[in-house]
Image (cartoon, rainbow, N blue to C red; front, side, top):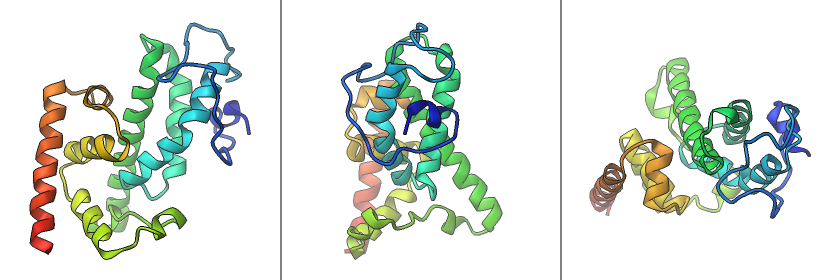
Length: 196
């Protein structure tokens, strides 16, 4: 499976591959590859971050996390020339994933006309192992958080990002990111205490 196939919306990877090409947080957008997507830096970024992007979309509540991740990579490839720095690619990818997930959930709410159903995380083989009642309560409590607090909390504790990267991904000031994380933690603690 080639990164240019995904960039052109034709296929998804079967499994992640690790590559030392490219950079950890982005790829060189100075034109080292052509418009066909045959760029080793983009390929390395894709291979290294596709599955974490799928995981992020799933944690944010997407019912089609692989499609969301694929679309985020397509948009990154399509708009990479707008990035001012190569290291901004990963933040762009995460922000796009969060925005696409939010848009799809909003669409599902309208289609289903039942707001509670759209935000439910659908079980996959990976999620089935976590089907304990406490985990369900935690996920439900996380889904009830305001959108920005939910995104900040997931990026911090499930994606294990530093606060500075969270602020960059959500395009908010550093202090606001810290405040959102703190408020989300307090809200979760309160909701989980009520269940105990």
